[in-house]
Amino acid sequence: YDEFAESYYYVDNDPEEVSAYKEIEDMLKNIRKKIRKDIK
Image 1 (cartoon, rainbow, N blue to C red):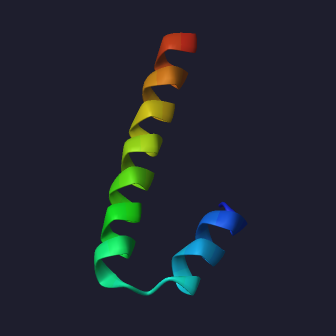
Image 2 (cartoon, rainbow, N blue to C red; image 1 turned 90 degrees about the vertical axis):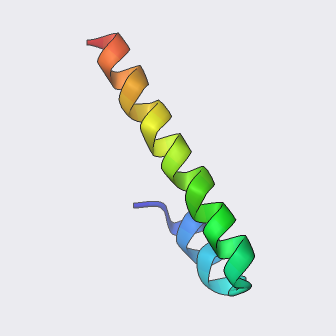
């Protein structure tokens, strides 16, 4: 849970920006998962 991500999310309700932000967030989550697998 990331407070900064959530506050950013609600401040800017422009649908295009929100969806773009969500895409970036998903990419970051996938990268984190890959990194975790590499560490293990």
